[in-house]
Length: 366
Picture 1 (tube, rainbow, N blue to C red):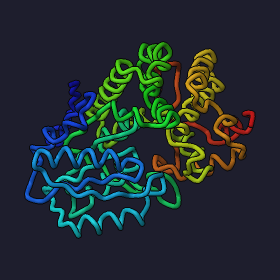
Picture 2: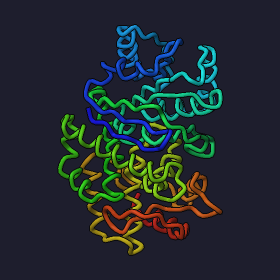
Picture 3: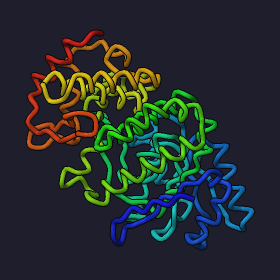
Picture 4: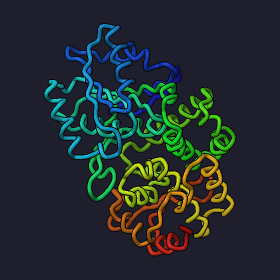
């Protein structure tokens, strides 16, 4: 088992990574057993994994209840949050209990936020089932739901007690979902690790084809990179953690334009957003054009969107900038951007002129 610590003082926890770990979850969860059954929250697509988890717990004499929610980004909503809270309260959840989030980023975000506010905070465990959730959203304690104005605008920082990652769960994940998650793997190379991006160029195809060694290495490396950044800046106060948002400002605008629907998955939006961040940086003379071209080429080769056309976006630059103005990172009327001086050299720029962004977007082919 690979174990990655997330060092946050009293809120520290471990991310444990091992093939077949879901089948041994009972031994990992035993320290959290209390009088009431565990509550497993999952969605209809992941429900078979929920049945396996419940059976594994039962074989160890550990009781559980399962709540199955609808799949998809629409589940990160006020309606589903209220419904989940009511069901957890009906089951008698106490602050010392642990709710298990079994699913992708949507389930992890929703269950984490519900746990953060239920009785002013109860415990939860992350068992991520998608590549995106395993390498990114399950680690670091960001929890949220979407609002009418935009994505992840209502939420809280609430750390899990442990994260259990079983790479074998990816065997049942559709290729499109794996590719979307792979965008977040690539992100860690583009932020500050050019060698890891080069590793992705050489091994990304094998990872997406299911090679267990490539998959486990990428997950562990990505989690380790995120854990170090989170330990330095848990609540995004120094700017260090903001680096993890590379591609998200452009990407969230693209997602908003598609109504946060399956037309553009979150990881696909991030992929296109990273390519746009590099292209914009190159246009501004900040990074070599060859680096921007290299990033776009690898995303394209991985089957991911790498510009507006491949993301299916035909709207105007003004419309996309309007979406950006609802970004939760807005500060005193200014929107910080993650730009780059090259592969592995991402930085936070608080002086970006949105008119330049609009012009840049309008000049891109549709």
